[in-house]
Length: 223
Ligand SMILES: [Zn+2]
Image (cartoon, rainbow, N blue to C red; front, side, top):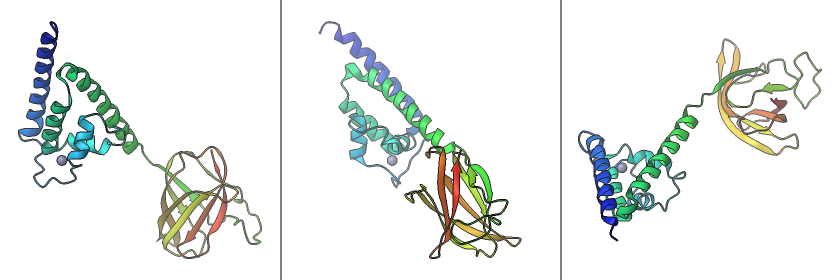
């Protein structure tokens, strides 16, 4: 009990300093948000302030608090209630580290670029049917990653909405997405964002088909 007083005073001073810093940024000409757009709500704030919420799952709320004065004020008040003065310093320091980690992870995920890849299917062998194998009959090769894929579709393909699926060679669908094909100088070009970063290297099937029509399947190798 005897030496708890200096700790308390230091914590209080630290806390005040942080709150003042927050006030400068958020309260005075900061982020007013009078209509409380996209606010996570008091229960979410309470969960964060009391460290009951999973910060990883609450990253949107954490980011939101940093850019919304009313939420920052509520959060600060709730945190004061929730936190014993003796542990204020530690909790704030670990919270700051967590927020840095969360924001860092978020920035990395958001800004990881899409890699532009073009696949030419205009002379490809199709798996079913009895086309004669041609020079371009080998599997489509794609790098592992988040791909901004342009597919030059077989001659006669119509512009419009297309479904794109990646499945195992046993036809278990792993990725299903859609894209829009447009006519570019007589070539039907389908643009689709395809994230194959989580697939292991190996052989797959790539199925492409106009919405409501038969799909065409091509062997695919992810490198
Ligand atoms: Zn808010």
